[in-house]
Length: 304
Ligand code: ADP
Image (cartoon, rainbow, N blue to C red):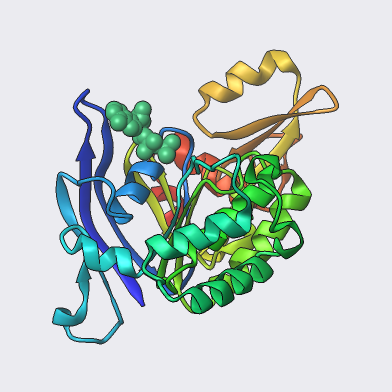
């Protein structure tokens, strides 16, 4: 399975260019779409989930090497795409008075699993898979954030989808819930395409073999996280500074990030050579890739 996106653009009626000529190749496995709030991630997710129209571009879903005619045109063959699609939206509306088992049964029926016995087996298997079997009789309104997200994944898996889209699934989860959710996604991502949109760098770091960084509708980087780290290796520098110096460094154009550690700003710069006394070479992390990409507006220095 692979998804090929070519020249996708979308401008909203208010003039906001949410996607600007985005082209991406997404293979089987976990793919991270990383960007800050407002970057255009949900717009891209909704277009791929056939819920929104693009202004221009195309997206083809198919098996690599197969004939062009056997691929699905995601933007135009919506009904066919929905049959192979699992979608977990950013806001998953749940029905407070219904328990997980009833709700999954209902969704399975809506998705065309009409045989009662088959549906029962399916719902049981899904509840076991996402580790909610014990809680199957509990009302969804009483679920924690992590349980709701695992329920959301269970419903997205009905119909054995080959393309799964999850929009900001870990926002609001505590670290334990996030880990359980990671484990679940990892299991699922082995044989299908899972596109995970997130503003949380750790999500991509832990899960994804390929990623893209977008900001203001533009694609800034596409490739494996490892390659992006190698590209900035030896060019990240760190120093603890006085608060009063922060502005000067920010104006230098090389600032990647600043964090307060024990009340003092610790800054990171991207520079080919050692910036000045007091800076130590730092091990680059994906956060450095992300922040340098979005602060510069492009990753030419990373891709170089
Ligand atoms: P993200 O998911 O990365 O936070 P979105 O795709 O939700 O980004 O939004 C991208 C940009 O498009 C933002 O500037 C947002 O305000 C704008 N936007 C999103 N939806 C709409 C809409 N329905 N009408 C107008 N502007 C929108």
